[in-house]
Length: 242
Image (cartoon, rainbow, N blue to C red; front, side, top):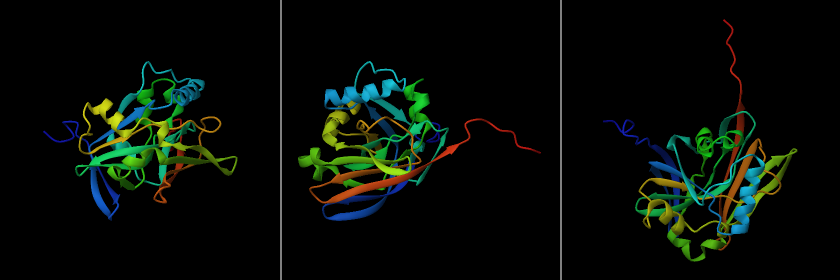
């Protein structure tokens, strides 16, 4: 039986894996993608994010956190994301990757179709590509000062670059807790990439033609950054003239 027939769809990415004494490019095979939702550590901040989405018609979750499986084919390192219509938007997240017997930390955007999200959250997670940055850091070297890491995102609003999200990863549950809740052990399955939750936005959730995101490590004076552009496709079918 083929790997595809058994449901083992995989995707390879050329990623930079950075530790204290090395920065090496590896061909990484991602075997599974998981999105952890409603991961806020602070109940007030979590409630604020829930209310943001309720304004858009998204139903309040029955419990938190929630884990959604997403096809690995949705992961992308491209600079352009094609979407249907103009109702999608990005949200900055830290991501975890288990690879080579080690846990790595990176940056991604759970780009989501907001209209579909009002119908079914699980469905909405499958409709848009999930951009990720090509650099990751060794988690074991960050564990002691984890809560100091900062997430930021910027969008273009009325022709100007504006801050859309900003806060420390202390707003979300720690990696060890999310891994335990999802996998039932202290280790993610090899080749698993997990999106780990986002921050409330400044203003309202809204689309943008580009999305810029950053994971900053102030203690070591370094950042992972990625910018991608959003290309809307025709929302309605059309007939080719012959």
